[in-house]
Length: 398
Image (cartoon, rainbow, N blue to C red; front, side, top):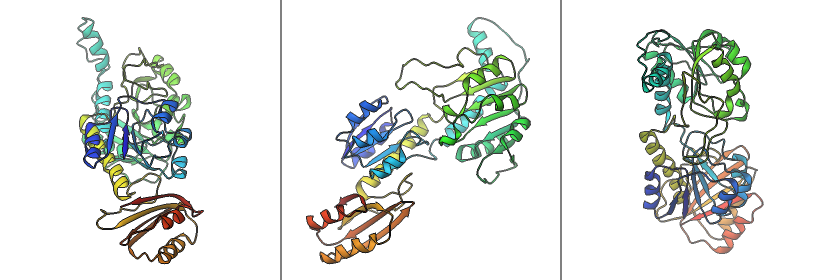
């Protein structure tokens, strides 16, 4: 199979896929929609990070595309409904860079509380300002975490170990870890804590989650951090509250509009502000995390390409298909309606094909059937499977 990896995905991913016999091309940057559509004309597997958008138009132009690997946590840059409709599996790395994001969050809290950015700027300008004014320990401070998923909950544990009191708010019912306290509303959390850190996911409902009203409710001289999604925060409102002194400092790693390629110009309302840490979406970009992500997602792509496994797929029913040994494997993605399994097995019986093993899983409107057969199959049988009105995609692995 032909594989295209974009956005500086770790070399281990390419090595793993090449070791399985696949042809791999790696490019350093993201591609715009038209460029990506052209590039995918003869590509079977695609690897991206957060800067590449896989739209319906892109998927329409990629008839050979079988799977997309998001070498990051989020998948909001992929049209999942369209991918499913085209029979394209989507995988991501929901856990691999959790620790890296937690560490940059903790480092940012300390740097903001100690006003290290301003001290650093003054020193580079030749100013010796040896003063404790405005510099605080984080021990005893109240941290508010908005979004208590994989990252938020681990941040909770590490922050508590450093002596912080942790409060959290999540729209889902989450188990509090350690001594963390759950808040009944976002407003309650903002009125309580001195540091606010956002760790929500990329669903459309979180767009403009944090704006003028939320900043106004925050306690005076609080610190604010966003390590989640750029479109979650109104950056113009944040700038106003920093300039007024209501927000004492901020650390922002994600932005509503981010450059597509290394070295492109970066524009933001937040440039040039004191005690504001701006980082180029590198919360999960440590060498350790990127290596883990590279191996994990590439392994999922390989498992799907070579064996039909959809374990931990974002959009398809999960089947952990094992290695293919001495059999032919038919991976049948179909609309989840009654009678499909019976029709498929009747077709096998009609052609004298005995089933060695079979697994069926469904998710919503989609079903996924993996069947190992010991006998040879005929082209006619495959054609009839493909022509079933319920078929979304049929893959023959042998």
